[in-house]
Image 1 (cartoon, rainbow, N blue to C red):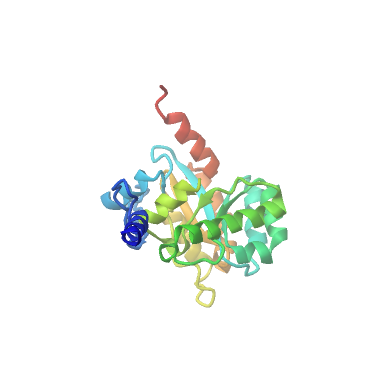
Image 2: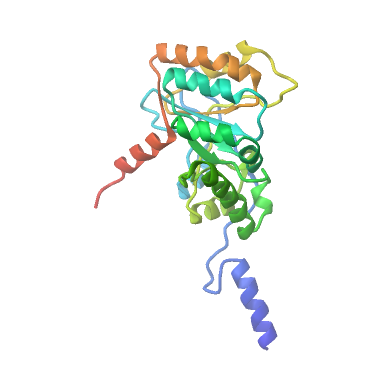
Length: 263
């Protein structure tokens, strides 16, 4: 009987606890959305919107304001991140760089430069795995390992924004990220820019940055892209001419907090 009870208790812990709390789904979900057309906000649809809202994740800023948030995924360095940083510095724009463990270990000077120039260093996991295949402890190790390595370089522990690798997640992953204190950030503007052997030219990247622009847009750009590095300067310049301003994810979070009802 003791053995049976132990097995039951273990099973209960794995499926929601002895109290009977329902376990959340770990079914993989691929992030996706209906792209912006004519400056209308992108839309992930009712089901995804409901799911991410439950865990305070987001992919849009204030859609009533012509504001853009630039975020970059940094899995590894391909020689273009310094140019991206130069452009952001020129335009006084704060970006968020979601970095992997490989990038942090391989490019400590770029991590330091990002931090010194006021950019946000987000978490893209250490090994870039499908987080839905990991246990709670493994998820924590993937995320905290990046945080610890960044801290060694910058002395800061404020990189608590998470972007799930490949945009694959589940309700369980969202729950665990929130439990660990991470804010999951998706995106509302993206295009195929990460294939380094199939770059399509500066104009391709520029056109997508422009035509998908919309109020509250969170851009996902990959810094391995030569096209992105060449198009970013013109895109920021011309988006400003269209009335857009650029803010950081920190600004967005602050504004969200200010809009919360006060009791």
